[in-house]
Length: 286
Image (cartoon, rainbow, N blue to C red; front, side):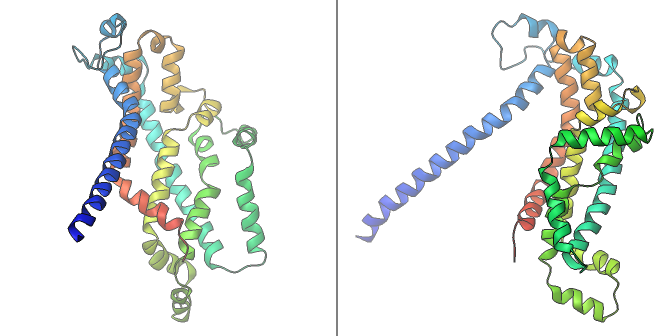
């Protein structure tokens, strides 16, 4: 009787797993297909791509000429270096700013702290378009257009990252802080020696998300720079399109997009577990 009763249960469990994994597989194919199509198009020759009345899911004669064309049409290498400098400096400064801010809201006591933090969160309700206009006027008045300072300064803080890190800091027991203060430890030393090591997953998550945000920046770089010496990869893609090259030669356009996308994909694949751990830690209380 026990064996007979367990068979339907095992069968239903297998069916549920099969349905779940089938759904996940279909969803994964839907998500990954655009990346596959981008990579496939980038290795098709110009003549092959234009001769396909019905798109093919394979390349008859794969070529790397499209990548050479992408780098020869615009100084894509220089734009990649500019983007790397912009991303690294912005991320480093932002981590310092949000870490100190989150620590202040999580551990320090000062009059009106809750009100200030509430007003801080209220800033997330302001449309980005209004912030961009204000930043543009400010940077222009400071004569910082066409400079790395003008690109970087508006991006060195984030209310969302401060909130995420503050929630992570708040999970560290107060007893550690009071014990450190009894031993004569300063707040900065406590932050460096205790809080940062414990909350490292969240810090890594914030840093990676900021890297992705900076690498994909489009509106602000387009608005604040018109000098090629400060163009980022987003400017390079738009420059290719404006020159007509992208409209006529889609495979070369896709090759440029592949070059820009690969670093972010590699970064995410290398740190995906830390990203998930940091987000789950920041979103859990107690």
